[in-house]
Length: 314
Image (cartoon, rainbow, N blue to C red; front, top):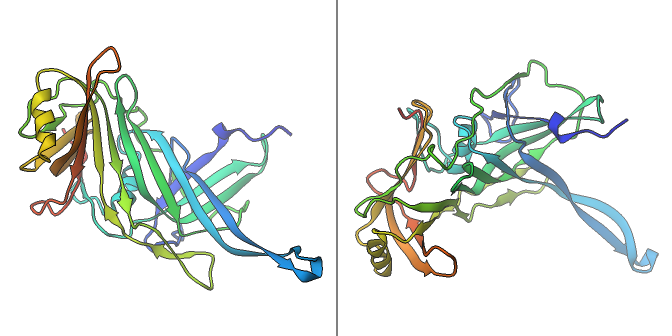
């Protein structure tokens, strides 16, 4: 029998009501790209004088669930994942970073060889704990998330009774071309020539909480949200204002707005309402003179958040 092909994997998720517990009759949503999760046993090997100090005895300390999700950004397909990343619920199509426990259960269905028996791997309490959104000229918008899970189950060939599977409604990747709207730094000249931008959704102190008596985690700490925006721009009319403002730290704070999508009703707008410059440098090593700008978003008292994402924008 030939080995299984990755193109035959079904990767699906369902939001959990109770973190770490798969709903009794789950309505799974299938995914364009697999959530690359692993459940790795944490092994203790004994050493014994009986065996003259050599390895003798074997135990499992716990099972660690980690992984990544690397995918082109498709409108609506990863909204539940963004909710776990920002630890918040979508309210009237608006998502702000918070401290809720938002988790997903993930099921990978893999054939045991070509045409073989479907085998299910299930992971519980999965959430994105960091990642990046990358916009690169002449490329697709790329979402890369780091994943943690609270627990996993033994592989099985038994399906969950009553489980359903639905495909995501949208399939077209958002590109970094005309799918990106007018990116603005409020109070500064128009940004006509951005070559690339990366938004790093960085969390510090967002870590696993292991416990005795179980291979599952107690939970994951909420952590501190410390995003960073890095923009690489061609040097043109507006560069002087940005360069000099970065030297003072950017006073007062300014808003960064990133519109994504070109189909009415299928667009996102990302707003970092209060930002300061981290640094700015000029790169003259290539054929084009480039300006690299680092931006440090901070908490905004008016919105009560550091980042606000609005979907279904006209």
